[in-house]
Image (cartoon, rainbow over all chains, first blue to last red; front, side, top):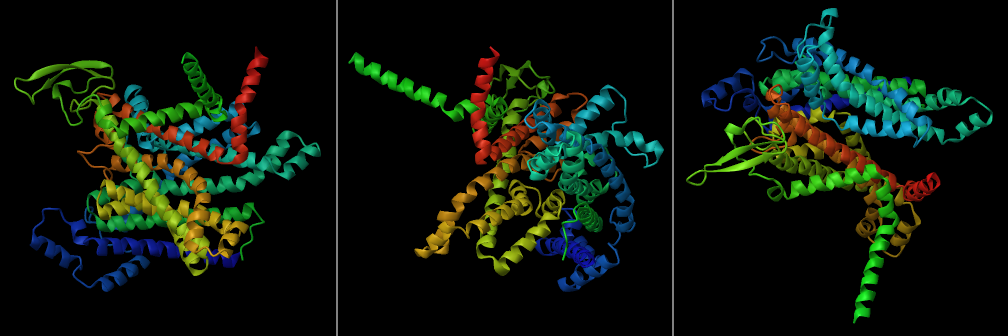
Length: 309
Length: 330
């Protein structure tokens, strides 16, 4: 188990290094980093000046080594737009994204009991309705749902602010309602689908027949036996969803002006702020790996059969 | 003579009734959700394919005097291309946008790009994944290890992050979005193809083919690929709506389709500023995306279900059951 965890962490570490290497090579070999830093109509002298200023006139392998050395110390250079270290900006945005993700994800848990309800009678009325609804909600473009909610709830009914951010404290909770509601339907739908599918699959297995044959109450069969075995797939999927929010909420963050990592990355790309782009890609990848690792741990805890050599 | 015509008509009637009573058609008619979503998809795809014929008005024409007309309204469009200028009464089913362009026309042309991005993305990533999956599953060994470790790496990078990085470096364009889908989604097909090929290559019919002297290339193309069509198609059908939704998000963020081209995501992004004054510029393209994605999803689920022989039998049988239930009920 311990050896497995060490290998697993090493694996994630290797993936992040690989991803960052790909980013570096793509920027420096496929394109010219100066082009990503200056405006399209900059003069030759300005380009040469910036190239020298950022040390981009040095050979590629020197910069490649420096890039990884900087990663090790989490030094991403100074943001070109905000004139403060890119690391600081990224760490300031990280909790905002995490809180929004957790709230939306928390609402999404509603999908699990819905899926269980549907699985009680496969092909029954409840099952059909839950099935269609779950496909409907995963087909909605999220940012469009956000715009519709702004129009109906914020503009027409004037119940909540259209967009903005007032800190993560108690005074700012009004601002998180709409973005979280926008993000949650997809998670509810996917949770319901996966719960339903795994429960139905488990219910076809022998141990369920045995449990019923020995006279166990149907509820006990469902919740003590079936759910326990189905939980493994459900937890894996829910972990994926939480990891997905680390940058999957980008469009919603932008619509609601929520200062998270996704919005930061897109703003940095538009402003040609290369250090912030690198820093936010790194942090997003790090968060995704971390959550995946956590899911793996829970997985082993839920299913003792999974033994890692 | 008359008799001949009679026989001919009877034969024709027989063919029609045979088709009509065919289990597949009957099953379709009783499964109205699949029927409606399939019909909707056919209409949307035909409209997109024949956009110049299907669109009521020219794509680029702007009528600034007619801007932000609500759905189901009509107005007088001026044609300044001919002298003296002529006017023409026009009907706008879905209203007009901020430049006085007909929403329905924009929707049909936008759908052309949104759907082709979705479909081409699936074709390119499917071909890439299929190729690598077959190689990994058939030859095994080191090459299999390399391919599957690469799959693991790509699996752990979030789609939108990868898309933003790639489009940031390559620049936004139609082709580059398809490249993004190829890079970001090939792993799904690769995993499934590898799994199927690994089990097939151990089967007697592959051994038999090899024993009569078939080369690897012939075994793969004639004996293994036909068995891969169904599993790959069922993934593909569910991947198209996913690609369409991703394309709309990318276009909305400004990393996707660029004007003067149009896609449903771009229409939403352009309409966003006018949402308070004219709700339809946001609701109409959003509904188009939603209904198309939903239809693709429902169609994909149906395809997955009927590709399983037991489920297919159940689906074909359901007509009989519902008919019997109807008889019993009356």
